Length: 147
Ligand code: DQA
Image (cartoon, rainbow, N blue to C red; front, side, top):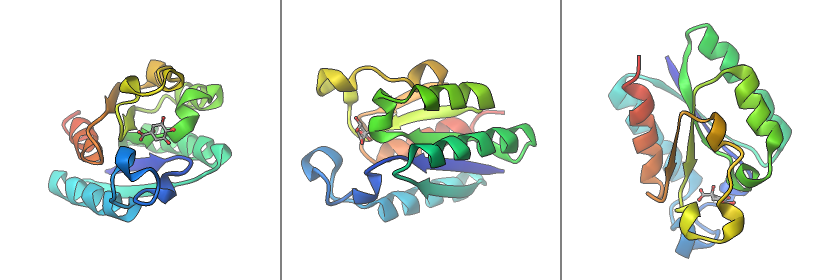
């Protein structure tokens, strides 16, 4: 079975982008952490990033089909700023009936008020925020231990 890790806009800049908030490690570093965690738990990793909302929506739909077919354990989803704006991603997750763990590297609740609302949280199984890139590992663990 596969675990899908989806990353939204600007996460390709990880390591260069606001390092005081997001750290100095790159998205490639995140991918290798995720790969280790998936290996450990006996899951395959599918790791993706896009700056385009429509790509993310298509990937959520695909994930719903894969989960229904028994090929996918669930999704770890860092939607970036689309978290705070995208009713379309909310509807996609709901429509695809896919198990999603919302993830943020930073603690969005300790930051600006405009980061406090999430369109993803109401349709997520759970939310991981504020543990840096280690949060991806914790979210993979949370998915892996479910039936
Ligand atoms: C983020 C938090 C969002 O508010 C922000 O827009 C991001 C990254 C995080 O991982 O902490 O792009 O999702």
